[in-house]
Image 1: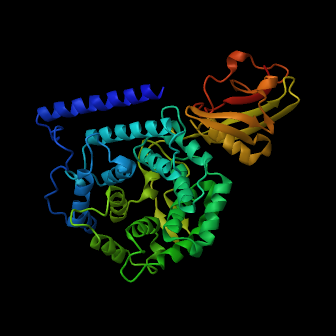
Image 2: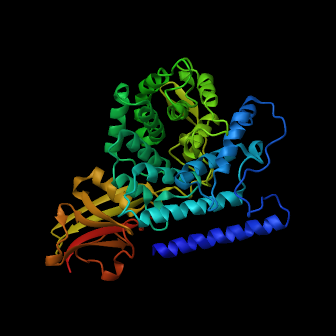
Image 3: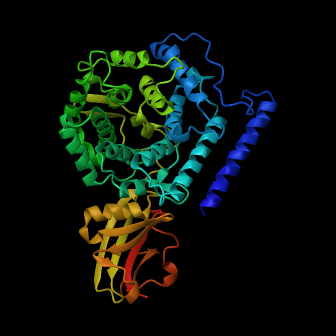
Length: 464
């Protein structure tokens, strides 16, 4: 299975490379693929507005040059591939301003295919090399930035996996939650409570942890269901801004870049910190070759310098409209202008029912109605149901091909007694007097089963 994925992705990448070489031979504006990856010709025109001047400043151009120079022959950046691709994608929003500085669309496609191969290998090897929450969150954020749904990655729900293994470290946890929120996945109440606990005790946490927590909460409060949490952002944001040091930074390059992303566009905080000084701090610590230590950290710094941080990924135009975002969101006087794009056909909410039957003769029967975005995995629906009603509490084992649910409502499968949980996808609410036939058993697992309007799902604990 994994072998076929890798072969398929490799063939796509090979086809893109062949296309790139053909265009080169026709003297189109692409580099010779026989050379090591290099940046295209720098911008030469003079641009007058302040934002443009910042972007084409020597420090910015040199950093971008370094970033592209680190690209390897397989079109990736080793462990930094997702971070670099995220930064390059966000920089594309400046359009013609950076024309000639950024890789072409075909080059980005080759790099994105390399990243897909990296993810597949990571999933394949997860038993011998455990997947770290930070690594998985980086990949999920990059997929979202590239307009791919990390909940539907070649039959895997990466967000479901990320949320199933909650990170023990607060920084990693906030990063993982930001990735889930960015992908429009359901963020559970206990996750929100943990973020709020961090925000309320910000003075006891490191700068990077607080900054990442603010980024995650800023994403969550834009959901209309959590708009009441807006007030929780003001105090930790002000506290974070006040930690700026006399040199303009927040302790180190990474902290400074992350704080600039977390506080970006919160206009009411201008009196608490100096953004220009923070920018100068970053630029003054650039290496002679244009790097900020390595490709990963250089990507973080570039996001801060272009005023487009990780919080901007969900706002990218991917041919869809997020109904939970409005044109203006006010956070206790911290106002940020947001935009919505596209149509709502991709992410419209749908309503389904989810039923549990216990026993071959159905001695217990529980039904719940769930509203969630179309194409949400049924595994995510189960997580939502568990929070709403304790009867739907479940346990599952994670395998390379997804989650296997073995316990529901306190009943665990008993192979010795031939008692198993069977999942059905039905055209109407199940009726115990007319039990469903075996041909209605769901053809795929809970991760691959995607909900549609009017679906009815039944998990039945019965003897086979």
